[in-house]
Each structure stands twice: as C-alpha cells, then as structure tokens.
Image (cartoon, rainbow, N blue to C red; front, side, top):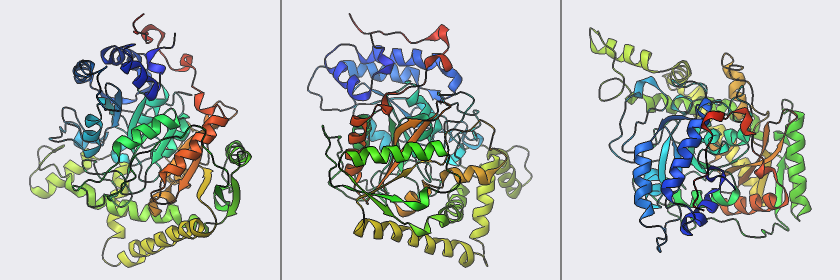
Amino acid sequence: MTELHSLGLQELRTGLDNREFSSSELVQALLTRAKSVSKLNCFIDILEDSAKKSASVADQTLGKDHGKPLLGIPIALKDNILSVGSRTTCASRILHNFQSPYDATVTKKLNDSGAIVFGKTNMDEFAMGSSSEASTCGPVCNPWDTSKVPGGSSGGSAAATAASIVPGALGTDTGGSVRQPASLCGIYGIKPTYGRVSRQGVVAFASSLDQVGCFARSAGDLAVLTSALCGHDPLDSTSVPRSDNSFEVPAGANIKGLRIGVPREYFIEGVEPEVESAVRKAIKSLEDQGAQVVDISLPNTHHAVNVYYVIAPAEASSNLARFDGIRYGHRASDCKDLKELYYKSRSEGFGEEVKRRILVGSFVLSTGYYDAYYLRAQKVRTLIAQDFKAAFESQCDLVACPVAPTTAFGIGEKVDDPVSMYLNDVFTIPVNLAGLPGMSVPCGLDSKNLPIGLQLIGKPWDESTLFRVAGAYEHATDWHTKRAPDSSYVDATGSAKDSRRS
C-alpha cells in the first residue's frame, strides 16, 4: 500500500474527501516522515502543535461541500514568509527570535484555501545564495545525494518536497531561487510573472526582482498550489489585477503548432554535456508532439549576471537597512553609543554573504558611482527584457533551455568562490530581470543519478502555456516519477508508516 507521505497534492485531496484517511492522520504521517529524514536539515521550525490543531479543525469539514482546494493538506513555507504563531528568521542571527504580528498575504491565501502550515523551511540567509549553505541553521542536503547541495536559496522547500515530507512548499525567486533548487532536486518549481503573486509580508531582498513561487512533484499539483497564491493585493503596490489567476494542466494537452524558441546563448561553454543532452532530448520530445522548434537569439543574455549583481545588492542594501537592532531583531550588548549599537548589531547579526552584498549595494548607490553602475545596469536590464519581447512578438510562444549549467555540486565546494556560485544562476537571472514567468520541469538524471531540469520561459502573464507544455511533456515521459532512493537519506529507525484506515 502506498504510504501517505508519498501521495501528491491532488491524490491527497481525493483521499481526504473520500474519507480514506483524516487530515490528522496525514499530519502525523508527515511528522513521522520529517523525523525520519531530519539529516536533510530542511526545516528551521516544524510547527507540530499548530499543524495538529489545524488538522483537527479540517477533519470537521471534510466530506462536506467545503470548496477549499487545499483543505487539510500540509504545505511548508520558506522562512522569509511571515506567519503568525511561528518565527520568521530568514535563516539569520539578526532575526533569530522574530515573531511576526501578521500573516503574509500568501500565508493568508493558503489559510483561506484550507491548507495547514506544516513548518518553516531552511534557506540561504535573507535568500542570498544558490546552495542553501549560508544559513545559521547549517546547510540543507540534497535528497538525491546528501553530500550535495539542493540549490538555493529555497533549498529547504525544494528538499522537503522532493523527500516527500510535504506535497508542496512555497519559496521565493529573486534570481532563480525556486527554479534552480527545483531542478537540482528533481521536482517542479515555478516563478510566476512579477506582480502575479503578492509580496506583502515577504521579507524583501530585491523588491523589483522578488516573486513568491512554489514547488510540487507533478505539474497538476503545481497548478493547484500556484492558483491558490495568485490574485490582486491592494497592500502590495506591485500587485497587478488579473482575471486569469486559475491554472490547470489539461488532460491530453495539445501543443501542436506551438513555437518553442531555443536560445543559442543558453547552450554555451560551461554547460555540462549531460545537462545539455537531457535538455535537448526534452525539447525533441516536445517537437515529436507537434511543437515547432525555432532557433532564437537573446543577445544581451551574457550581461545578465553582471546586471543582477549590481541591481540586487543595491536593493538589498536599502531593504536591509531596517535591521538595526532598535525595533526588533538581534541587538548587541555593551555599546557606548548609537553608532556602535548599529555597527555591532549588524556585524554580529548578518552573515558573510549578506554583508558582501550590502557593501556592494551601498557602493553602487553611492555618490559618484550611481550613474556608472546602478543606472547603467538598469538600462541594460531594459535591453534584456526587450530581447525577450522581440522573440515573443515575432518568433516563438515560449522559450525552452536549461535551468542550471550543472547538476548539484558538493556542499562546501563553492563557498569560498562567490563568483562561481553566482554563475549557477546564469540561465535563471534573465527571467527575473524581465519579470517573466519561468518553470523548472524534471527532464533527466546524469551519470551520478542527479536530477536535471528543463526551464520553460513564458510571455508575461502566460503561465497557462507553461502548464500546458509541462503537462504534455509529463504525459510523454516519466522523469517526474523518479525519486531519490530512501536508503540514501532516511533513518530506518524513524521511517514513516501508513496510517490510512483499512
């Protein structure tokens, strides 16, 4: 019999509504599962008590006409998303004991849809990283190989979903922080169009780039979870009113005649041969289903990393100025004056990568350098967006390419080489700069049995096409069914047990 923890979100919906098991039984199974895979270090906090209470409440409604797509289903939150009743630490010492007085809009939407907040997931500090190693709680491990990183910065959410602790999780994507860990962990991940999902109550990194996204183990599950998050929020000035906020993966998705652009700039030196081979085979599979593959050029792609590491640190230096040890967060002791309080509190509270980006951001915004760096970066950002716009207007309906140039690398392998770490996001950053929707779809395993992801990039507000293509590919292949063997990361003494009623 299939164990509860291994069921997908839609399977859980059916089982709960048919009263095959209760939400309380499901929560207990997932708590047992979380304990058995604790070596992955996916969570900063597991909210056991509140999850059990929420499950008990959900059980009273199950079987009725509730109209809540996620009723009784546990979902994890990245620990930079505010939720009442739990800490929100951003994996940083400076917010170690911060308790939010209100819910983020996406947290409220999950609650309104009946979901149970299962826990807060580990991450790179303040979402600044590509490996989920820069955390005060220690690195997250990849379920496929615990000596490897899961990607970042939403690595805890990705690993928790891939390891079947939860059927889905929320993350944030500023330069690839949902899509890259989804690729490295062999699951689905989406970054919606900028403005599609509210950022209110999400601790800001780079406000013009941040977007909440989510993870799931199938395209259909991802569509359900994404739909629950979308919608206009008057509390977020960047939130855009849209009527098309519900997504699905149509049965027998037809992609005949759909034009898929393959940018030559995304198949370059530095891409592992096995990654390129898997992505090209995935594109060929789509072509075999009737899609038209078109060679395109996005000529300003090679500027993207440079542009990002001017704009993102600049915005981060402004956003993180609020963490000063005065109103909340870590406050240094034995300070003789206000200046020393600021200095010591921030020096003690922030990690090395966060400090590095604050310094870079402060520099590019400083008098005498603003025009040379920040203003110029914004101009090139516009050129990158115009490349996509031109391609979509005349050549293709969506873009297909790798998510990352490599599969998962070793924990500790790149911590002393920030430039090498930054280049991990070379294919995901342009999507954030242009504000486009992007999705990671499992498309293969390399010779080390590590996952590879296909990136689908859509027109603004055209997530529906991404789901349609993902569904067509999922129907034609079985990569989405591949899971890391439990023997590689499960503590046999705490293995999850099926609690379904007989």
